[in-house]
Length: 162
Image (cartoon, rainbow, N blue to C red; front, side, top):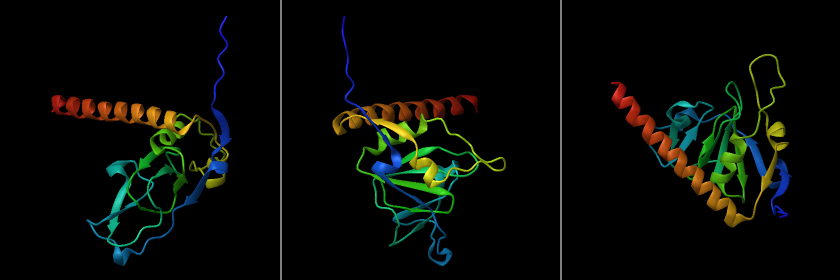
């Protein structure tokens, strides 16, 4: 008989990450192109609503999580960015691709009866099992490659439909 001991540690996300909610943006400084993307709560266009040329609020790598409407969708971000209201930003020393997957596989509990909303404290209470950093990177890379393959095949399917 074999006995396996997992070296994964369960922690609340808020204990191992800084979680902030997006804020208002300076619309006079927003451009169609630029160095630093401005991400909103949207799932379309990768959430990009514009760019800043010389400023950002969250340094990459980090993860964004939708906080209103279709809540709980995490996305790894490898470029510094500014989140807009209702978008949560998660900054951690953990691998962002691993963290994206861990958040996306978490069941979101909606506590309101109106428009679904996920707050920073609620996200901070997510309990996640974390392996060692090297294992996080391997798992994160695997899921990133799978996501890229799914996207590529979806694009091919859309072309075939046309």
